[in-house]
Every structure is written in C-alpha cells, then in structure tokens.
Length: 246
Image (cartoon, rainbow, N blue to C red; front, side, top):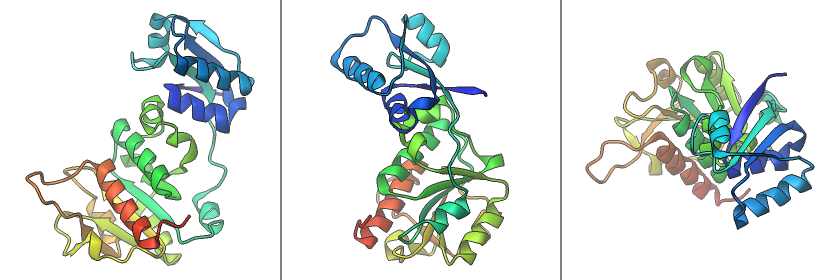
C-alpha cells in the first residue's frame, strides 16, 4: 500500500485522533521539548503510535519543506467511507456543499477545506482535471480539515451539478458580474455554492449549470477576494440564514 506524508501538529494530531492505525511512521524533532511537543507526544502515546526521533535535516528531507514544526508522519491513505450519493442520502439537514472549479493551488485548497469544516459544510467537490488533490501541503494548510472534510473529485463536474439539481439542491455560482448580490439570495435550503479560481472564475460550462449567479459586494478598491475568503463569506452566510443549527 502506498504511503503519503503529513506534517505539522494540526494535520498529524487529527490523523492520530481519527485513524491512528493508519500512521506507519511518526518522526519528531529530537531537540524540541517544549510544551506543545510534550502534549503531542502524550497524544501519540495514547494513540499507541511509537515515535522516531530525528534531526531537522531529516525532517526537512521527509517533508520537503522547513515548515514541518518538528512533526512528520508517513501514513496510509484513508479513503472516504462514502460516495457523494451515500453522503447525501445520510444527511439529516439540507445539504450545504462547496464546489471548487479550477482551484489548483494547494494552499488555496487547504484553506478552503478548513473553511468548509468550520462552517459545517457537508462536502467539497472538485473536478479531477482542474483541481489539486490532497497532498502534504494541503493537509498542513487545512490544519486537520483534510482528515475530516469529505473531498470528492469527480470526472465530469457539469454532470455532477446536474445530478445535484435532480436532488433539488440549488446550485449557486459566484461571479463578479452577477445581477444579484449574495445577501439577496435564499441559501436556507439545500445548496451547492460554486466558486472558481481568483481572476479566471468558473469555466463557462460550469457557469451554465448554475441555477443562480450571485456576487459578493466589494466596497473597497480590490476587485475580488481569495477563493478561500470568498468561500468563507458564502458558507457562513448560508449558515447565518439557517440559524447556525447543526
């Protein structure tokens, strides 16, 4: 079975919590003995995972970056337990989905997963051919959300949007030139919020499959928001309209 790397306290701690059996090797900075590391080592011990002490050079080699925080793990890939259909069938509240079209930067994806987790979205959806997959950088930026937020990469995004509409999920795209503002839209019901990459936005085919287009009001001099910030604005507006009920 192929292994992948996780690094940083948040990403590795969440994996220890949700799937400790998948952690094959856990490396820690032998010179770091501050409170945060001591607390982390307790969690590793509680999870039954042995640690391997290493120096900074070895950790950098493993992680491919100096931003490892003294924690690097080799882990088995954890597959989503459900298909998108199974996940939707099992929900007890109106679905809230984040659809990302053309997001290829791992930092943006990691931040979007973190936002989606915080806002209580049920899943993040992206096309296989216009998106970045879950890698170590995504997991680090996501601060654990890459382990908890279902991320579905679909072969045909337009077809998937059509299938969501067949489930009576309202597909709301964001666009700077939309005739209606975000705060005028009804996001209380089953909703899929579609965001494109900063600058280029959604692809035309994706745009055509949206039920409605809305814009995020921009009051200052900048023309647009980073996609993770825009995702937060949209997701939390939907949660606000729903009364933040889980």
